[in-house]
Length: 201
Image 1 (cartoon, rainbow, N blue to C red):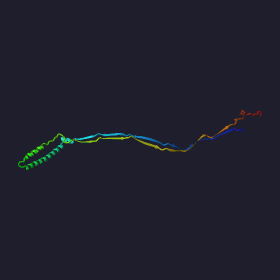
Image 2 (cartoon, helix red, strand yellow):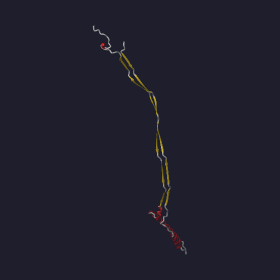
Image 3 (spheres, helix red, strand yellow):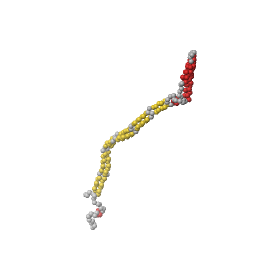
Image 4 (cartoon, helix red, strand yellow):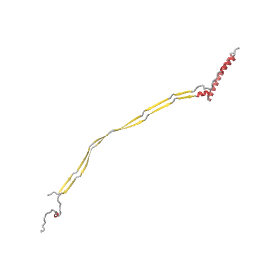
């Protein structure tokens, strides 16, 4: 008997993608930051200073009111002391005078000797007070400074596990084909039918 059906089976098709496990290392990085502190040159100069104090010199020529009162009071006191001493000395001469002694001539001559004393009041009796300070020179030099700052990050290890990827490339299938000759109904419609029909019957 002739085979009428052809059955074809298509199996399922898989695709496997295998990723192996791996260990990845990220390298360490280092950043350098540089900052600069500027220095400089500083020079400080102080010149010589001369101080003149003419207060006493001016007071000796033209004293102030307070100084004049003090000076006149001092002169009055000294004059009183000198007059007392003079009168005592002259009185002693007169008490000790003898006949024939010229006590009055001695007193007059002593007074004349004192009259030769004179003073120049229009010139300063004292000079100005002079003080001075030495000059000063200060030099400061500071070099520039460089600051280095390192920022270092350590490397990291990362473990990536392996995996298997499964994909279906072809679905399973069954193909049924009819490979026989056509079936005619009625069979007489078959053009290849050679059967004879008895019409007389």
